[in-house]
Image (cartoon, rainbow, N blue to C red; front, side):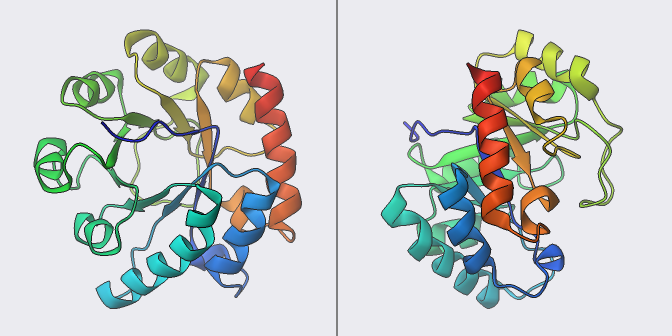
Length: 212
């Protein structure tokens, strides 16, 4: 079985928003603020650079027992011994990925509809990223926003953890939790912040209050 992890404040990286700071520097302070899970998302670098970045983040996260999830690239996840892999609807299929990574690695799936979510659960996903909840500029070519009602509907239909992503920030993160999500995934709200630690702490506090 995959690890049972805390999805409550899930950081997705984006170097284009990092203000020229290294991802390891941002992640180091973000976890101090309360980030509970990190996904390394790289769309525009070489495989070798992706692997190197992942290993740097593992050095930060492993001592704190915070999982590192690799976006899209099953080969990179396997190469570095990451805790999990996250797949979109156009990435490798869930069943194929599971055959490669086995039962101990976390496999998350982006769901753009209730149908996607039901299929992900049926074929053994460990969690679902409901995407996008709100409109967002941090990812191109995404489906129309599902909104809070979409989060609530998916939460009602599946039993595995649900994480909202897309346009989530301090002003709306609690609403996503109250709609039924187990956690929120954020990108620019932390990565682009002038102080990622403070941003993470504020988000963590808001999410925890909503969960309670």
